[in-house]
Structure formats: structure tokens, C-alpha cells
Image 1: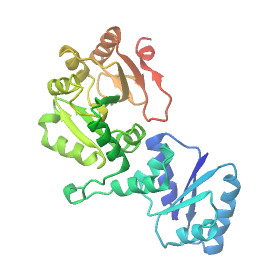
Image 2 (image 1 turned 120 degrees about the vertical axis):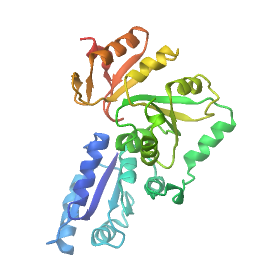
Image 3 (image 1 turned 90 degrees about the vertical axis):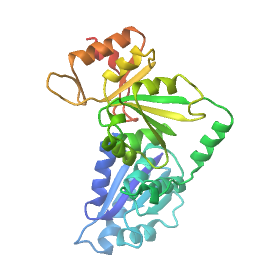
Length: 307
């Protein structure tokens, strides 16, 4: 069993843990040790000693320090360098932390995800994608002639954001995010925002309902790729159905509170028209679930909406 430990200056480790919980929903197996202004070397080592008693049950410990050469990192190195259970990475950021929490990847790949998550937002072409083992695997699948696979269909009004980019995408090993939205495809600002929000390691398609049906109906559209489909509006499902395409499963992630809506979950608020669309699709064979992040339990949304 793996433990994750964040160490750093001030409240940064606590902030990292809070952000992880917000994105992934996970709270267990995550520990923090902070170096405060009043702490000296001995005080910090005492905090690590207290932590040791909490880590005895774990077979692997990943420690993420905020700054290479900083006092927290040096303190961890001094205490754990010869401990074979402990891996230490410096220069922690949120992409690498989320990757570590959600999976069992080796430390080298976790660090690579952290590097991939760094981008010049205004000039992303200057950053450039990093070729990873996953890219090579996807390329091999493409050469073998395998069809694409839709790993998840998610209704999320926020489009591509933290939970999509840093939780769902790595957890499902996604190669391409497909955003289907008839408004976004005509809005250059929305398209630019979606492009900036996507992870550098995945491809992006922003499609109208009609174009999406064409691509999804042809299994050779994206050879060997694993797709995450994002629908920013419930009514997109109706448009796709009118064009003859229905998904077997749809995850209702985030539909915001608006005038005239009813709350069905903390993050799901629907108008009567949206409810009617979902009920019609349920009748026609689509199954709806509700799940905010991958580690949350899947909730049967069919039952919720039909109460």
C-alpha cells in the first residue's frame, strides 16, 4: 500500500493536500509536513519522527518536496535516503501529485507527468509535447489497426478543467479528448480556452454534433486511441440522438444551478427540459451514472431522476 507525503515551506503542503482532495476526492493515505518560520532543523526532524509512526503500515512511501535544496527536502533526504521504502521527488506540482495519488505508476513516470503539465500558456507551441511510453503504446495500437475506444462520456458544463485534465485523463489512459458542443465550435475564445486546459500529452477534437456523429460512427476515425467525450450541455445528447447516435453510458458530472432548475445532486441541477431529455434516452437504452471524480463510487442516476 502506498502513502503520499507532501513536505514544504509554510502552508504549501496543506494546500496541496486540499487541492488533491478537491480534484480526486481522496483523503486517505495523504500526509503533510510543513516547515514553519519558527521551525529549525531539529523541529522539522521531530515532525518527521512523528510521521514515521503513521507510515509503518505502508509498503511504499512517495515523498514530494516543494524545492530541491530547500530545508524540507534536505531534511527528508537526511532522514530517508537509505530507506528502500521511500522515494523522494523535489519540485512538486499538482499534475504530478494527482498522478501519484490516482495510480501506481513508478516515480519516473510521475515526475514526467509533472514536467508535461508545465506549459507556456500564451505560447503553448514553445513548450511542445513530451513523447512518453503511453504515446508509443498508442502509436503501436494505431499501426495495428485497432479501432478507437470511448472510455467515458461525461456531461460537464465546465468542459476541460482540473478534474478532467488531472484526474479522469490519466486514470483512463486517454489519448484524445473530444468536446462536442455546437456553440463552442463557433467560439474562438472557447476553443482557445479548451486548448489551453487540455493536458499536453493528449489530443483534442472540438466538434459540432453533426461532425461528432460522423467521426464516432467511423471506427477508423482515430485508430488505436482511447477517447474521453465531454458534453458541455445536456441538450447535445438530444441533438446526437436526432442524428441517429446514442451513447450506451453517460456520466453526469457537473450541470450548474440556473434559474428554473431542480437539484438532483450537489453538482447536478436540471431544468424540466433536461430531465425530459435524459428520461427519453433512458427509455431508449442509455444508462446514466453520476460520478464527480474517478475514485468516487458510481451512482445510478437513472434511479435518482426517476424517483
